[in-house]
Length: 458
Image (cartoon, rainbow, N blue to C red; front, side):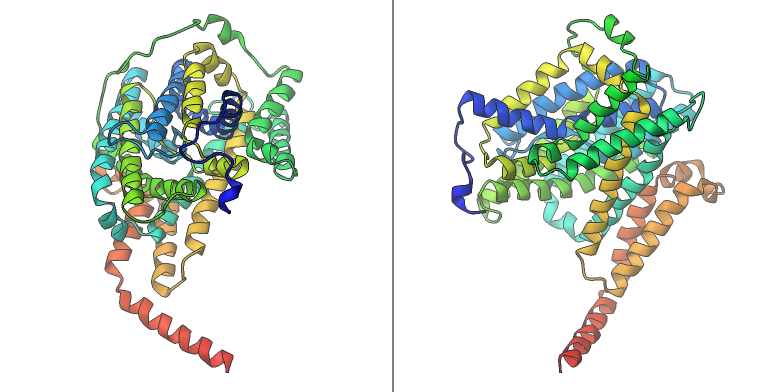
């Protein structure tokens, strides 16, 4: 991208109508990703009664977090046009944590208290990590990150497919109407992705959900009865569900916070590059530190205001390229739109009314894309013998405990709870193998491969 391709630079203030239009495109690109984690977690844990309130708060906190990240308040935030929203990365770990709390007899409010408690504790860990990121990268390597992101995507696919079948406890799982709705949604998403119109590609998942809801309404499968009971306005109540803590539930979530810190660096670097700002040097490092600290603070804020961890969204970097607008002033409009949407409880009730097969189709596709992004991370690295063994063992171990949890039956209860998460088992195996396997293996193999390549060119 050349300098003249940016219509509005980082410090510019576009006219109101331009700023609003660009902000709406950013909201469209991330809207589904903000609300879906809350819908998925509450559905999996039987917390549907709390879902409308939690969905509204997810939008509200994402708006506040975007303001902090884009406008930079003290040491918090990168000052870049980088939208924040509820993170998909935590979904599997949060469901696992909620199930652990359920097994110990927790009520709905107590389950949510545990989830928000461990999220607040995890955000403090990410804050501490912000000052030692250069050391962290030596342990959480691209191979480790790739393995974990791949496992996140693969482990969540069963959640999406369960929704396609009708959801947990469905009266007629696998109903052909449910499968038809899923096909319609996926067909609409694919049609948008193949379109030549860039805005259709950006909003493809949103269009897919809208198409699915229209189809569901025509089939008599759309019920908005809960919307009538929703209040016009509801002031957010901090710590409404109290706070709880469970060590076994906390470890997988803490591990994801470490991964999220590394991914945030990548998102902010991409935003810096798209905004024609430095990607090295003191100014860049200051933005990165502020961005990671802002990411952690926003997750702390999310836990206090009864929603799930927030993180930077990479898809919004694509909107900067698409529109040629890198002005951080747009963040005021994005944050404002999300705050307004989150202040209307009826919005949460409407979004919860999306039929499960419709949402399941969209999220299954998104989970698959998460797995693909992890595979890409792994594919970008040189496949030395050491890396191949790390990937093979980590994916095998992680998926193994997910598919056959009985393999852990002989371990103490705490270890069973911790290692039952594919993310924790796979991630820990990747880190341990990285530390244990000698680098000498990779060096020798690289030398042999280089010699072979030289011989081939003769």
